[in-house]
Each structure stands twice: as C-alpha cells, then as structure tokens.
Amino acid sequence: MNGTLLDTHALAPVIRGIFGSRYSVDQWFEQFIGYTMATTLSGDYRDFGDIAVSVLEMAASARDLDITAQQKMKVRNRMKQLPAFREVKRALRHLQHGNFRLAALSNSSTASLETQLQHAGISELFERRVSVELVRRYKPAPDPYHAAAQLLGVDVREMLMVAAHPWDLMGAARSGCVTAFIRRPGKALLPGAPEPDFVAADLTDLAGQLLGTRVSAPLHPAYAIAAACGALAIAGGVLLKKAKDQ
Image (cartoon, rainbow, N blue to C red):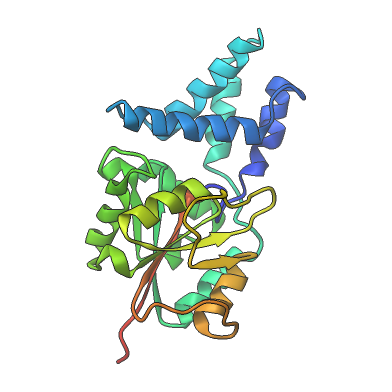
C-alpha cells in the first residue's frame, strides 16, 4: 500500500515540521521499513504505527531535537490519510472490469489498512484486506505472502506481487510469486537482485500489460497479483487473480 498505491510523500510537510531540512520523509520511511524487518529478524513483533513513531523519536534524539506527543499523533493520523496516486483508482477499476480479483496485502495493521483504503476511496475495489498482523511477521519474510495465498485459495505461484519496493519483490520472488515493479519517482531496482517479471511506469501501464493492451512480458496462465503497500504496501498492496472464464 504505502508507496505503491498510496503516496507517502504526503507526509513530507509533517516530517519537515519536526526536522526542517535535517531529515526527509524518504529517510524516515527507509529507516522505518528497516526496523520492521529488524523486529521480524529478531523474533519480535510490534505494531507498524508504533515502529514508525519509535523511528521518529530515534531520529529526533540523534539530532538533539524534541518531538511532542502532538507531533507524533499528527504523523500517526497522516499515515492513515495518505492519498492514492492519481492513476490508481481508475487502473484498479480497469483490472476489476477485466475479470480480476483484487485484495490488499500490507505491513499496516488490519485496522489501519481498512482506514487507509477507505480514506483513499478504493476500499470497495478489494475482495480481501490482508495485514501482516495475521502472521506477526513483516514482509519480506515469506509468511505474509503464503498467508495471502491461503486466504485467497490460490497457490503462491499463481500470485503476482506488485510493488514499488525492490525488497518486497525479493521476498515475494523467494516465496514463489511472479513479480512486477512499479517505477514510482525516486525508486529503482536493486542491481543483482532477481529481475521482476513485469516492469511498469505506473499501475495504468501495468494494467495495460496484463490486459493485453500493451504486451511487454509473458503473462502467467493463471495468477494473483499483490501490490504492497507496503505498504501498499506497505508499504502494501493489491492482490489480483484472474477469474476463471465462465
């Protein structure tokens, strides 16, 4: 969800209000995601929003700045009110009309994920909303991808993970998913990592490839798609599965 379907740069004014030019929203988000991975690697689990605020507090302390309870709450609230990228809603409808099933897969908590989808005006487009809270392990650990496949009743190899984050695609590919990279501004693939099956400028471009209006990669005969939000996904995300012909 976060960064793939929803624009995390909407948080920039809030972060700038705390740090000025000393710490950017991109720096915060990268550290934040890094610490979600660290909690999973260490065998721990904490709420996504709690980790986000803890990283803010850490960054402020490292810069000898004070952060108020009001500022922390403002960040929490803004995280739940991120706008969708301008093409997202139309592209999702296009895929839905093309006989795809859609579901969301995100590092956000179940409650926050639903709030994010509702605020962005895309909640009704998703069949399922899957949070890593279900398995208490953050992506790119394999558990969230396998849990999503089980909930949708598909094999993980039938899923296409769509993300603007190379680390998410690395975890998905390792779990057996087909993968697609969305080239959001400032995002690039990691050299040496497995190449994604699809690369697209945005979700409209990807929908065109999947629906055959633009063909630049072979289409798996039966698949589900997950775009995470990170946050997507989270971080997050969208899961799509081509429905069987009637």
